[in-house]
Length: 312
Figure 1 (cartoon, one colour):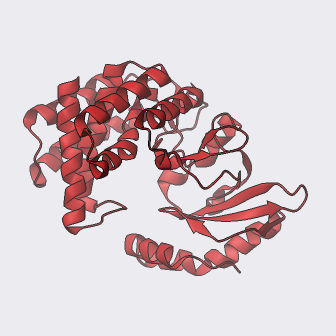
Figure 2 (figure 1 turned 60 degrees about the vertical axis):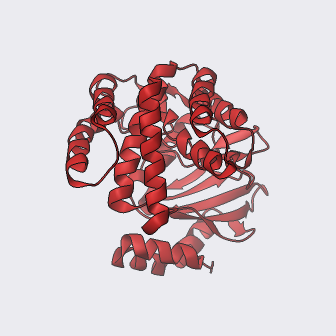
């Protein structure tokens, strides 16, 4: 049987409690069953993301390199295989097999290098923008519409602003609420990735870069500009570079490459930053659950929200 990484076990139990522990207990046997059904043999160490494991494999019948991905059952993972099926390998890894009951997929294997490892900020933003444009295709029925979700966001913002300590001005919060009201209800029937940050873009052989881990949302392609912030903000802080100029430049380059309106991209990115700041206050982040590290990330999100309010 496969060995589930210890770090993945710890974070899953911390996040999911008893349900996570029960799922982990049956994960090795489930994964072995999937390997047998899909005629695959392990081909390297088991990796993991925030909510799932990834097993490098070789498919017996054609020696194709692939990965078996098994995720913790979560609403945010339901439509991942649907998005892959629509794209059919266009800008994203190929979906070979799926088991929706167990949140499992057999996927094309890309290289381990992610776009986050690229030092040139313009290249990061342009690559993400080009992929965003290619992934923005007509959406089928049955996928979650962003316009149906936004009705919840403004009441959440008001509750968060009233209940949580924060450093955002009424002007910043007002701009976020205006984006919800003005851009949220009327969105195109376009499939978008939904979480297109640099760690979800992998170097590949079939194409230079391929996307992984989509949410499978339907709506405004400019929505994905907000995900790009996580790819650019922390590296700029760590390098001591021009944070404000670098972030504004990243959104500009992304929008141009994706053939999107710059102001529309900035508005979605500003809303992402506001919501991220409040989310961090309530729940922490994957990279920083609590304490000073969490507070630093929250403060960075608040700064970005202020910056992008001015930028629009």
